[in-house]
Length: 341
Image 1: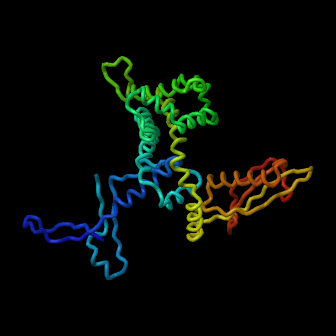
Image 2 (image 1 turned 90 degrees about the vertical axis):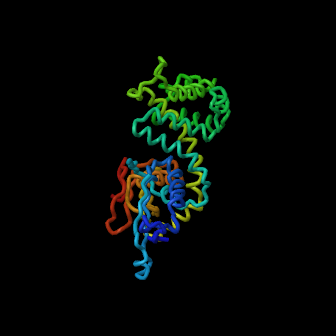
Image 3 (image 1 turned 120 degrees about the vertical axis):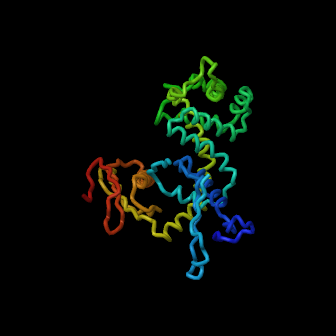
C-alpha cells in the first residue's frame, strides 16, 4: 500500500510518485463520526486539512520496498477536558453510526469553537444552521417560525433549559424578550430567534441598525441561549449512541485487556438510629488514571449506594482510595467522625 516511484513516459519528468491506495478518506470519516459523538461533551478540534500517512514494514524483507515512509497532504486549538474518559472510548468503538451524523453535527461543532474564540456572530449563525439543517427550516422567516414552533424536540429543549437555573436563570435575566412570554406564546420567542439570525446574517453598511464587528459581545447572551438549546437537541443525536450497552461492554472489555481499569475502595460513614457505622464497597472503573472526573463519578455512585442501602440515614463522610500499591486517596468528604478513624 505504500507509495512508490515509477519511471514516467514523459522525458521531461524523470519519475512519478504512484499511490496504490489511500486510507485517508476512510479514516477521516471514522474520526469525524467520533468527533461528532463527543461534541456534546467536548469539542475536539481536528486538523483534517493536513493528514499524514505513515507506512511501516511488517518485517525486514518489506523495509526496502517502502521508499516513502511518511507522506503529508496540506490543503489550534484544543479543549481541556476534565471528566469521565469513557465517552472517548465508547465513541471510538461505535461502528454502527449513520454517516449523516457528521453533517448534522458539523454546524454545532463549528459554533462551539466560534463561541470559545469570541466569534459571537459566527457562533450564533452556526447554531442556527444546526437547527435549520436538523429541522429542515425554510429560509423564509414566517415558514421557519411556523416549522420550528411545531418541532416537539425544540420545544422540549427550550423548556428544559428554561427550567434549569443551575448556571443562569433565563426567566429573571432573559436573552430574548420572548422568554417572559414562553409559557403563553411560544411563537414570540421562536420569531425573535429566527429574526436575529436574519439581522446578523444580512448586515449592510447602509442599514442604521447594523451590528459592529468590534462589538460582538452584545450578542453573547443570545448566542449562549441558542447554544444551550442546541446542546440539548444534539444530546439526543449522540448520547443514545455512545451509551448503548453494546459499546459499554466493548469498552469495559478493552479497558481490562490493556490494564486501564482502576479498582476503587469507597467508604460511607452514616448515622442511623443513633448508631454510627461505615459501609464499604469496591468499584471497578475503566480509567487510565485518577482524575477529578473519576472522583465525581465515585461521589455520585456513593450517594446512589446510600439511597439504596440506608435512605433514612444521616451522611457523615465519604472517602475513597485506589486499591493499588500506593493506596492513593481519591477523595474525602467529611461531615463528622468515623468509627474507623
